[in-house]
Length: 249
Image (tube, rainbow, N blue to C red):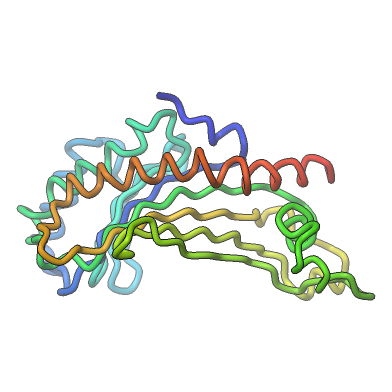
């Protein structure tokens, strides 16, 4: 199935993170063996960088999909940009999940949580706070707070966390990030290179009495993520935001 989210935004990306209770291995040979195994499966991933305690294997910036895999002290991740299908979006994270028990020693008891994030970037060369206010708060009680003399909100980056099951172990977090700075509002000159970003994360915590099987849990939250995006986020958040931006251009 193709991904239609690309038509609503300028960039779309999928990120998976396994958050662990214990520190992950940091030995040179262990990490190199892990990254070499990933590289064997995805030959285009040839750039290995380090920032602090995090090591990241990346594709060239010229790559259309720009896959990446990272290992930090207590979490590891994998993702790609602008995937053409859900199969392509989830392929690398699922491959990494299959490796980590054997190559990095991650077991069920070690998993703090598993995250899957859909990220969408919207280019807009203007006041991000105005667009977010217009698209998401128009006609609401919050909009009354902005009916004042002056430039309006200086920082408007709403977020919410929703429980998706009775024991609250499965959660959805939605966040919209404005990157407009106060100095831009004061000067009236806005940076066109900084997008408005939307992040929708499904997080799964271990449930008492149940084995945390990474592959099965990942498949489950992939389904939750697609359903939540299609039924809640796209029609109620993404479309109003896209329309508000289109009307300003």
